[in-house]
Image 1: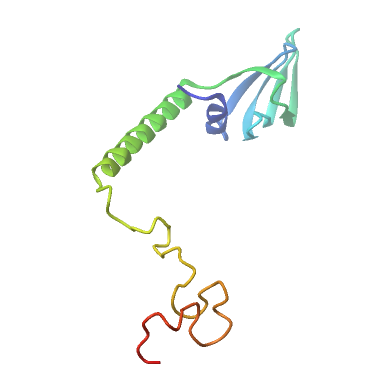
Image 2: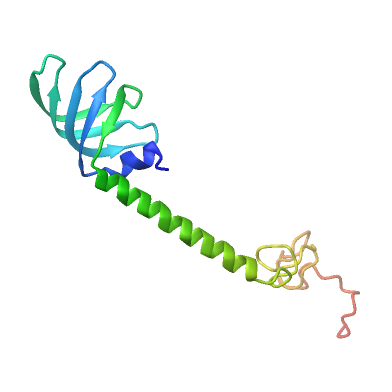
Length: 147
């Protein structure tokens, strides 16, 4: 399945045909698109309903104003190929993570591997520690035999 926004984004730099809700047809090079499907075309040929042609250097079309965007079949095939590669990579990642041991890694539950107690040793312990040299957040009576 190819999402419309992904399809339009993949067509940047290619010639597309945009059919509007009011019956006008614009043919031009897709320059940019956004998440609201607003698009910018360059070197545009406008075809009216009564088959008259006009050349427009650049055109911005709001996403809710066009009915269809016609693209070449090669673009759709390339997007489907990219989606298939992403799915294979995702499956490979999931398979490798399923084989990893569950209890390995850091035992603290924190990303940085440190414990969550306030009285961590060293300078800058937290909860009153870290205001200079000294013991940091350590309790001086906690078994330090050098006192």
